[in-house]
Each structure stands twice: as C-alpha cells, then as structure tokens.
Amino acid sequence: MDLLYAGQVDVFCIVAHDSDYTRLAVRLRESGKRVYGLGNKSASQAFQNACDRYTFLSVLEQDEIATEVPEDVAVDVRRGITAKAGDDGWAPLASVGWYLVSNDPTFDSRNHGFEKLSHLVRAVHGVETDVRRGPTGAGHVWVRSTESLAQG
Image: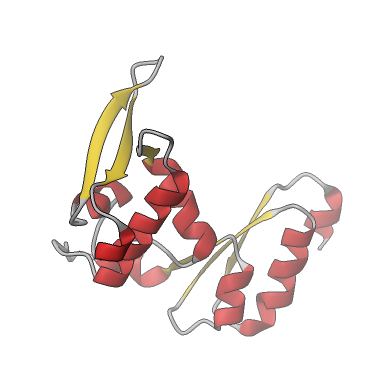
C-alpha cells in the first residue's frame, strides 16, 4: 500500500492465485490503478475478476498451435466486432481485444492455442481481416464479421 500512496506507480502486477489478494486488487483499481494478475487456472474467480487482466502462467510455456476456435469464443469475438465496429462494419482489432478482456479478464488468445489475437481472429469462420497502414506506415489489423450473431 506504500507504493499506492507514494503515487509513483500506475500499474501493479500481482502474481498469485489466492483469493486473499482480491481485496488488494479491488482497492488498487478503486484508486485508478491498473492491476494485472498472473497465476494458476485454479485461482479464485473473484481474484481473476478483480484484475484488469489475469494471465494463466500455463500459457507462457505453451507449445501447441490450434487451428480451430471454440464456438463460444468465436461468438464472443463476433460480439466484440459488432460492439466496436464503425458504420462500415470494420473495427480495429485492438479495440476488439480490449472489449474481450474487459468482459473477461482471463481472455487470452493463448488460452485457445493461438499465439496472437490476430491469429485467433483469422481462424474464426465468418470474420474478415484487413491490414491498413497508419500515418507512420505501421500496419494495423481491422476486422469485420461477415455473418450475423444470430447465425452463430
């Protein structure tokens, strides 16, 4: 708490899976700080949800590469695209990623066998991607759903 009150830290990382840290994470977020949690999948749901983002340590050592996206994850991706899309139906992938994490702090493409979110999204049936160059020349991935949420 001394770090919080010193006012020089904006982001806290708590490596734990114990629910005893839930209140600490909540208190830090109430103070406007970002909280990243790292731990086991057995971590309490309350602690995971109290973090801005919670990463399972197992994904850091994962070698397996997936080619299919579970349908519940595909629906979440389509829902995120719909929520963040402009009038033309396109949404920046980064915005979709933040939408997914804000609805589930444990969301990580690596949990589903994809090294990056862009790889996961490209594997979702009914989603189209486009790389657009920004003013600096850097490429940014944009996505759009080619089917309605009602279809799957």
